[in-house]
Length: 140
Ligand SMILES: [Zn+2]
Image (cartoon, rainbow, N blue to C red; front, side):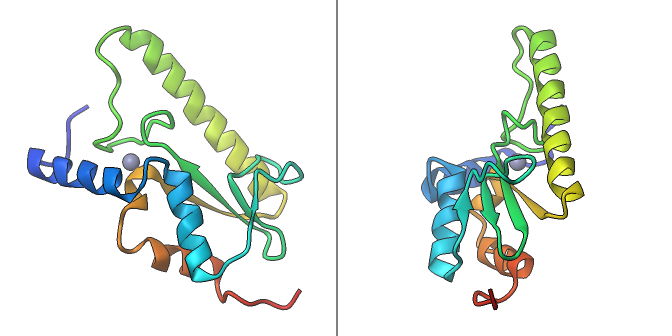
């Protein structure tokens, strides 16, 4: 896997992520709160068990860490050099699981958004959330 970003770009990106928060999901939840959205976490009744669910809108957000969820082409994801075969198999299973869960939610009629860890510190996160979710207030 070759990096698409230069060393400088990569360290800028890493710095931004580190500053944003230690846990990507918390950062997304914070952003949602400050935008005024109400949501549920790990709602068992939603197929695929998305991290964040909006039952009235029937929308769901999956927040993926770039390493564990094997974000292809991302500077935060790289197969470790030792036990490479083990990791490759593990990442393949993780990817397969992710797409299975996403499909399960979508087949049950939920609109889904996947947010990657590397997108979380981005200034456009709020815009991305608003575009996906629509107006803050909806008729219930
Ligand atoms: Zn990524």
